[in-house]
Length: 387
Image (cartoon, rainbow, N blue to C red; front, side, top):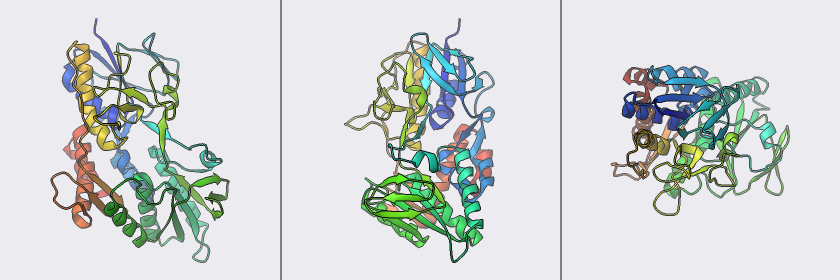
């Protein structure tokens, strides 16, 4: 009787692991892929849909274009994992048994207990989120005027927050829409914890795009009209977007595995194996051990790299072979600010930080390469103009 291998999630971790697993197994096990969407979202380009919703056709890739016909796909929401019974519990009630499981469910937005934030803010974790932001901004712009522009606040100046501001600015300029954009970051610099030269390059492009950058004070409270920042600043808003942090999905909180109690992400070794040798974890769902004190970063780049080894290790586990250890290699950072882009510390490039056409082409190339890896060159070529 064939072993049952189940992969959870259709993000970078899940989609990449499915491709790798299928290539390694050659039909030697029954594979089931479970996700609450029937497509893989190229999440690091989903912000493009804020400006132009038609881009969704390029960044949402149907699962049938990714998986092999022999892999069974189930569209459903995971509500729990029973490691004793080896069951994945689904919202529909049609639970799925496994012999080996890969948890690649990604993350959800963390609100850090800020009053009103979850209730009133848009997030950017899905295609529906990006399209919802587009609709909200479009509606706010319609109801505004040049003398009374719509106020859009983006909370969190990490990768998502910066790219979101860039797309809103492009929408504003494309449509000559009356919109003021505010980027709020509680720490002292945008893109906190990164190289000062990179931070400066991003700040310049945001300021050139007429984004008001507010750093050094945290959002403390939100109501339906106002964001309260620090001790005494109040900013009224028409659209509020929160990109300030991540935490594990609700369905992993009660899983009987070692987790970080603050963010509910599952601890995994460098081979992705958890304390249960039948359960592996990857991507934003996991805290993956790495040399030194820090786990692998919760980035698309890390999940992409890890997925190939995780899929191979699942196949190795099925065959009772030794597992491979994965070490993350940072190949650099590329961030878009609307039509502009900034690249930093890119592997093989002698310049530390650069922008212009080379950075823009590199950003497009990264997205196109991923799409080609999970589907094919044809779809990547069609997506190129919108990346």
